[in-house]
Length: 159
Ligand SMILES: Nc1ncnc2c1ncn2[C@@H]1O[C@H](COP(=O)(O)OP(=O)(O)OP(=O)(O)O)[C@@H](O)[C@H]1O
Ligand SMILES: [Mg+2]
Picture 1 (cartoon, helix red, strand yellow):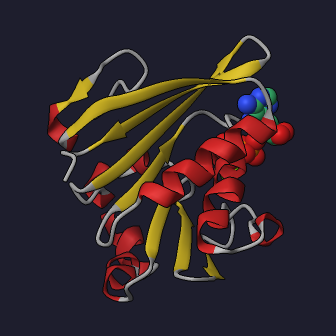
Picture 2: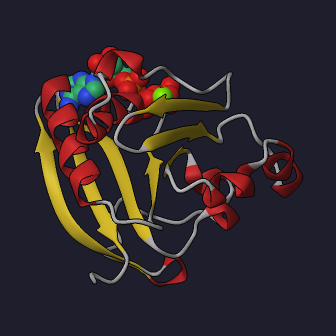
C-alpha cells in the first residue's frame, strides 16, 4: 500500500484528515513547527513522520522534544539504533522503521511494548509498515519545496 500523503487531503484508511499546511523556509522553522505539534499531542496519540531521505523528519523531532523540556541536542537519527529514548516531562520514544521489512521485524524491536509505557511515540517512515499506525494521532508529511520544505499536518478526529 502506497498512501499518497502529498496530494490527498483525507486518508480514510488511516482515519486522517489534513489539518494544516505550512511552508518551512529553513531548519529553524521545521523545529518551531515540531514544537507546536509536540504541544498539541494528547495521551495515547502517536506521531508518524513521512518524507523522503533528507526531508527533515529528524530536524522536526529536534523541535518536537522541546515541548517536553528535552534539549534538541539529545535528538539523533534512530535509523540504526531503531529507537532512541529521550527523558523529559514525558519520555519520548523516537523510532525509525526505515530498515524494517515486515511485521515480525516490528515485533522483534518490541514495538507494541512502547505503547504501555505512558510516553510519546514518534515514528519516522511509518508508511513503510502501515500496520504500525495506531488510528489516533498526528501524521506529518514533509516534502522538498524550492529551498525549503512543505509540511502537511494530518490529524485524526479532534477531541
Ligand atoms: N525547512 C527546511 N528548509 C531547508 N532545509 C531543511 C529544512 N528542514 C530540515 N532541513 C535540512 O534537511 C536536511 C535533512 O534533515 P533530516 O536529517 O532531519 O532529514 P530526515 O528526513 O530525518 O532524513 P532521513 O530519512 O535520512 O532520516 C538537514 O540538513 C536539515 O538541516
Ligand atoms: Mg531521520
